[in-house]
Amino acid sequence: MEGIVVQKYGGSSVADAERIRRVARRVVATHQTGRPVVVVVSAMGDTTDHLIELARQISPSPPKREMDMLLSTGEQVSIALLAMAIQEEGAEAISLTGAQVGIRTDSQHMRARIQEVRTERILHELSQGRIVIVAGFQGIDDLNDITTLGRGGSDTTAVALAAALKAERCEIYTDVDGVYTADPRVVPEARRLEWVAYGEMLELASLGAVVLQPRAVEYAAQHGVVLWVRSSFVEGPGTVVREVSPMEHARVVVGVTHDRNVAKVVVVDVPDRPGVAHQLFNALAQEEINVDMIVQTTKAQQATDLLFTVTRDDLPRAKQIVEAVARDLGATAVQEDPSVAKVSIVGAGMMSHPGVAARMFGALAEGGINIHVISTSEIKISCLIDEERVEEAVRRVHQAFRLDQLDSEEAPAPQEATS
Ligand code: ADP
Ligand code: ASP
Ligand code: MG
Image 1: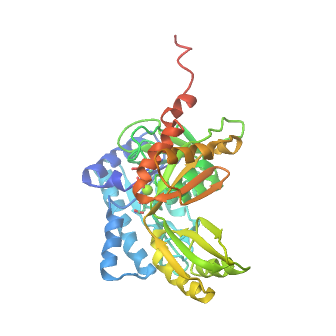
Image 2 (image 1 turned 120 degrees about the horizontal axis):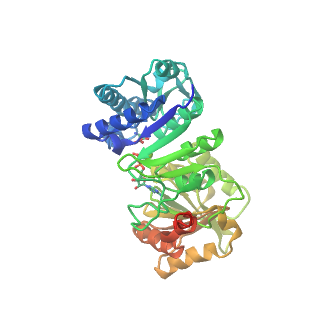
Image 3 (image 1 turned 135 degrees about the horizontal axis):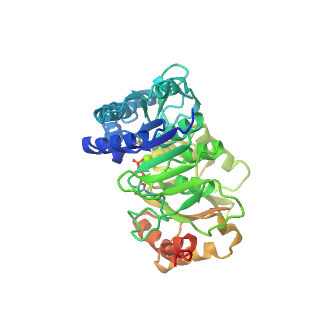
């Protein structure tokens, strides 16, 4: 089918009845241009957070299968209400759950990955002139059990549908009018990016810019789906996330991000011999705990300290595992610190520009902000710092790279043609 438009509306865009009606009007306006429209919606407002909190009141570690059963209800509410609102506007609409569409995933509850998207049902409904409303964030596994795709997963549902339907457009509507050089809630002078490359967006998202789920960006890159991030509240050009050719101007730094879901663990005085790191990190890997930054410092007397970070959510489990291994190895102590955060800069041009790291460290030093750990890749630099300084750090780094002026570089030439 030609010209399909996929639109995704996040939780704040459908937070109450009035907003749902507003989304309905917007969807109907697109449909009236003659295009087939598929809409993906998230749960209303903070519904998912509330459901998680409710589960915690029942059990400190609820079974993941039951969490998925619970969390998927949020999206089921919003698809039904949006379908009703669209029908009130005089257009035809039908709501479908992930299972009804045939969004097949693996069985990793709460972080399932999409394996296949069936399109027959959607195409049939579209051919009848209906607007199709799909529940974001959910799918179904081989046992027909409901799965969810991890926080922010409705973005991935939208991208997967756009890819499977070979949609002409995939629009992500949210409460900001695009991807910014930093979280605009933290840095008021942050600038909207006209465009951003998949690789940069993947780093930004993975390092804390929640505006897109990292998996959605990865999926879009793999399937060549161009994403258009826009505001559901105001009209505007938004940000386009796409492939960028090496010929295009690579910006040194496109953004600063921060992530508070980080905790530091230090294993003190582990013996300095082969196999130690393997034993420790293997034990964590077996329990599917992701380790991010790692530093080993050599001390006297053949002992070293091993410092690493995990997400704060994983800290209790990580601690248990590490303490057992530390006893085995004869380490003197295991220290934990959940009050840290990570501040990062991202940009495809940094690999060819010397001095970028020094500038970032200089900005932190000027504020007297101590760096615990540093990690780098070709297109990003991350520093672990105290959580209480993180917003200040983001503002200082943003300022140091003059990101408040970034789009003057990329703006079209001033109106020469018309003057
Ligand atoms: P939705 O409910 O629509 O999925 P999210 O809350 O998941 O919305 O994502 C939008 C939020 O992402 C914004 O409100 C903003 O505070 C935050 N954000 C963090 N970093 C950035 C960034 N670099 N650019 C834009 N928004 C960002
Ligand atoms: N409702 C889910 C969440 O809050 C999915 C999403 O919003 O994308 O994470
Ligand atoms: Mg989101």
